[in-house]
Length: 262
Image 1 (cartoon, rainbow, N blue to C red):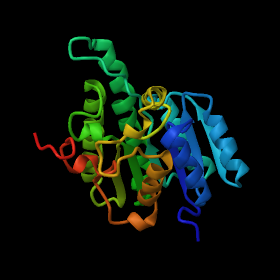
Image 2 (tube, rainbow, N blue to C red):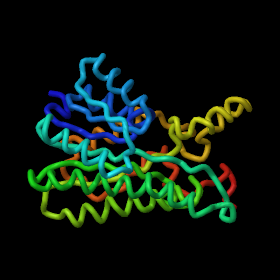
Image 3 (tube, rainbow, N blue to C red):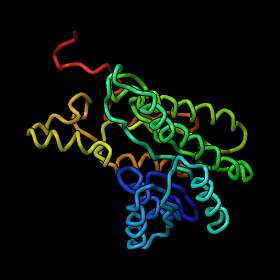
Image 4 (cartoon, rainbow, N blue to C red):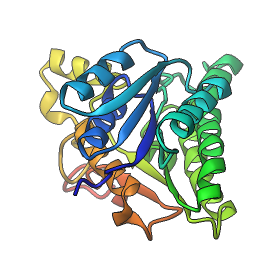
């Protein structure tokens, strides 16, 4: 039996990267996927999963808008038997401005998408899930939310906030049967990080990508999608309130130059 047979999943940020990989994987595992993204390429994601025999619906809209999120959940409830999984994955990087270059707009725009958008998804999904006393909510955080060194200040702060949302929501939903967890990706080749990879390739330093983690490489979106699938499935029925690093081991240590401790 497929691991998500008969389930309905809403996935935000589904036009590319981890969101697209998860949409395709969830559909292969039997889920009906409601894919949400501001980019029209989300329709390509749904076309791809349908071409493989999967079931899905595309919603083009802002995943940080309560109207769009509520619409996605309402469609799951009305047309597809109810929401079983919410994967609040949409996010932006915000670049790497320094402390003295940051503006109020930098913070406002990034936190609206990365943090408020996740909260809206958690809130909207939890309401019907609580009624049925079951459901899995997954949030995309980042190793940047665990400690410094993996992103700019607003991005890192937003991802630390996502981890906190997952943990506090899991506890506020105590006794309801609804699980809330966060995934903390390390360096993963997606549309958001593509400039990093393109720059390294243009300089001939592609072999150094991911050099600070013990696996010495970056992740593919499929590797993150596999973790999301586990958390979405009944196999993770006792996993709750966790921030799971999927980073090749980067967060297991302070990054060091091999052979040097200082």
